[in-house]
Amino acid sequence: MFRASVLTLYPEMFPGPLGVSLAGRAMGQAWTLDTHLLRDFAEGRHRAVDDTPAGGGPGMVMKPDVLARAIDHVAPEGDPRPRLYMSPRGRPLTQERVRELAAGPGVVILCGRFEGVDERVIEARALEEVSIGDYVLSGGELAAMVLVDAVVRLLPGVMGHDDSGTEESFEAGLLEYPHYTRPQVFEGRTIPEILVSGDHARVAKWRRSEAERLTRERRPDLWAKYQPRKG
Ligand code: SAM
Image (tube, rainbow, N blue to C red):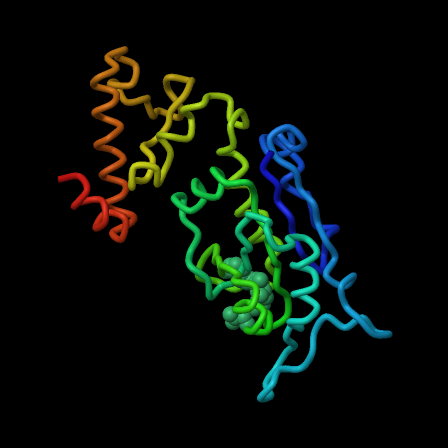
């Protein structure tokens, strides 16, 4: 069973949105979640998890010794799961990486707060830095939830149809085509005729060309990568 372990200063934020809908229903069946309070691994009377930055500057930095103890406790040597640190400096999360993670045994996720974590724990525990986008959140918890949600929905048996993930945005390097459902006419707008024609080959062709149009218009970066593959 896929196991997600989350190291955080705010375990009470979990499972949060992961406890409802697809992910929530599959919890305990296809995946498990355990959260760990980083402060439990701090020492001293004040149980400090952070300290002032070396070299000065604003904010606080999470202490490497506390984080290393937490990681070693949750994922001792031999634990095959990748250790991720949610970080705006990380490699942007992609559907490809999400698929790889979903094929593995689970993840160990460190959620940062304050200015982030001491660089040495990233090196010493070989943490993979993962970003969910080019903006700064106040902590890694929401980013961890985004990652776990994206992974869990791909686990076997979680989505209703086994193939419902294969036509989605990014799977073929394209954004997804537009969807329609009843009523046939909505505020004067009709469903494209092809989609109600019953001609599956024409529907597939239309969807592919719409996916290409949307990708070209909205995501020149994806379109540029898609072109060589297409040829
Ligand atoms: N000082 C850091 C910087 O400029 O790169 C930002 C620290 S941020 C206020 C606190 C924590 O939020 C980070 O350690 C990280 O865990 C999380 N975080 C913020 N933005 C994120 C993003 N885009 N992706 C993943 N994690 C993020």
